Structures are given as structure tokens and as C-alpha cells.
Length: 452
Ligand code: C2O
Ligand code: CU
Image (tube, rainbow, N blue to C red; front, side, top):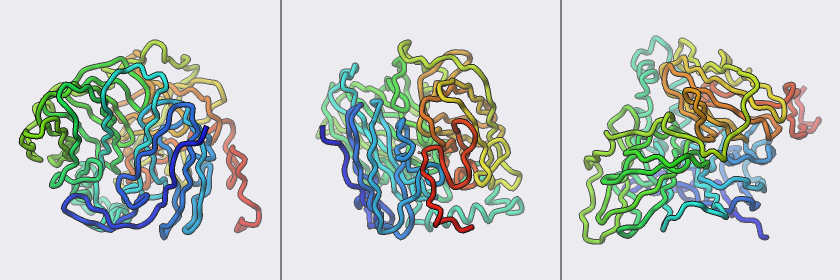
């Protein structure tokens, strides 16, 4: 069969966020990037052409992928230089809702992300329509670039009380991200999804934001959650979901007749992203600040999620703890007290299952993401669904069981882009750590490129 996929050209472009136009970095001139679609078991081929003035990569978030195609610079592949091209070719083993994004610095916060939807050849759910929803927080071209924001955060010290308390309180996001987007549209000119009354719709919600968890609800409707991070859970019906950066949720909705607000409230703040789901031409368009009762109703918790019986990983044979911490300066984030420059590394043997206790000692949420694998969440001794990203509450712990079935040297990090860039990047690796400059995938750096 012909591989699926399309060429992605990473390039600067002007994009419209609704009423406002900004100059930013894009895939193929649009934010979000184009939807890449395939069926589980197929091969996807995506040539990346780097027309940016910087190195870049594409990471296929959530895919159990060949490590050489993971887009993880410094781990398993070299970044693609300006003017160069890299052909991503990989098999997609599992159906589900995924996304892709640059894995270099703060580039995803400039708009370098898009959906990756993998259909199930034996789809067990029945529905009439799919709607893919990408959530984002936006600053580029509005209050400096993401790199400027990072520099400001890094320049802050504990003597700078305003910024420090902003960082600690999570208000930094609101300072730096004055706009919240759904599918690249700000609330003043929202995306509209057209459907028909009575239709059963599968929503695929992806949080592609840099540092904003969202609470998501659809006015007038309950949500029946069926999947998280691509994998099925036992269906559970709620009013709203909380989705951390890097997480995905699929839910089914039977639509009524009218025009309904789809709202993503930036967690802990007043600002929101907003879109409209319309099944009737005549219904009045809801206001961007429309009251949505579901936002204060029953919210999905990990405690509510159960794995289907057929989808259990083997029991773990040992336990390791990873502490999520913060240095007193407030602008260095650590895993087991270590920063990315000298990373924390969890070592596994092929075929084993280990339990990782994620112990959040800090006052902020951390959506921890593991590359190349799925894991099973363990909540109060009950086995939750498979996921690849878990959002850990301030001062709480969460256990995940990881099946080591994809040898390589893998990133294991906080998906808050600013935490990641301020040190919160570790590794999961098979066997002893690789020598510097080499990886487990055999991609030795050519000797003539060594500088010493
Ligand atoms: Cu979505 Cu390491 O990232
Ligand atoms: Cu974090």
C-alpha cells in the first residue's frame, strides 16, 4: 500500500487568529498544522522541509515509534538544519488521537503543532461525525516571542517578587499568553463546527498549549469519555474534562438542536478559549463569555477512568520514584533534583514492567510525558487506562506502570514547555546509559564532527 502522510514545510508565515494577524512559525503556512490521517498498521511518510531560520524536528506525540523517527534531538536523532530535509517514515501501531509538534526549544509555542489521527480498522464505536479540537495558549507576535518569555522567566530571581509569585501561582501563563485558541481561532472570531441535530459526534480534544491546562465543556451537553491519549477507557459520562498539556481525550455527544458554546477555561484563571458547535442555521450564536453550567458540574478525574479488561499491561516487578521538584529560585524545575543538563534517567530491561511513582513536591501541575511507550495509570490500587501523559496535581503523587517494549533512549519530561526548557527533562533508557554522543539506536555521530 502507498504510505500515508504529506510534506510538512516548516516556515515563517503570517496567520490570522481571528481578528488579529501575527507573524509566526508554521507548518505549511497554517496554525494548527495540517491534519495527518492514517489507519492503524499503516506506514506514514512525512518529508520535513526546514525553511525556518533555526534547527527543527517533528515529534509524533504518543506514537510507539521507531526511536530514529521520534524527533527527540540529543536523544535519538540530530535536528534538521535550515534548508535541509528529513524524511519521517514510521508505522502507526495503535489507533487513536495523537498530535505532532516540533521538539526544539519553545518552537511548539510559536504554532509548530498539528493533529495526527489514526483510525481503527475495526472501530467498535458508532458515531456520525468526528470533530478534532486543538487547544492552545498564544503569545507569539503579541507580547514578544516564546524565547523572550523564557528569557524573562530565567532572568527572574526570588528577589523579583512579582514575577516569582506569578511563576509560582501559575499566573505567568496569563501574563504571557493573552489569547487562548481553539483550532487557531481566538474567541473574537471563533471556529464554528457544523453538524445536525441528533447526530452522535466523536470529539477528539488535544491540548497543544505550552503551559495551560484547560477545563473543557460543551454547553447543554454531557460528555461520554471513551478514550484518553489514544487508548480506550470504560465509557464514563461527565459534564467537563480537565486536560493537561500533551493529553488527549475523546468523547461522544448526542447533539441537540441549536448553537452551543464549546468552552476551554484556562485552569485557575478567568480567560477561555471558545468555539461554536452549530446544528441549526437559525439559532443565535452564543456569546464568547456565555455561561456554561457544565463548567461547574461534574469533572472527570483519573479516579473515574478504568481500563477495559482486554487492555491490561503485565504487573510491575519493581518500583522507582521520580520526584518532581523546584529549585528555590523558582525558575529551575527538576526530576530527582536533576536538571536536563545532567538528566535523571530511569533504567529498564527489555520486556519488564516497572512502576514509576511520580511524586510532585512542587506547588504546580506537571503533565509528565513518556516518549515511545504507553503506560497504565494506577489509581488507588485500581488499574486505569493506558496513557502517555499524566497531569500530576500540586503536592500529589501518581503511579504509572510502564511496559518496556520499545528499546531506545527516550525522553521523559514535563510537557509544560517552560518547565521542560527550565530543566524538567529526563530519560528512560534500556540498559546502561549510552556513551556521550551515541545512542542506543546506533546513530553514532560521525567522528569528524567531534570537537574534541
Ligand atoms: Cu509532546 Cu516530548 O513531547
Ligand atoms: Cu512541569
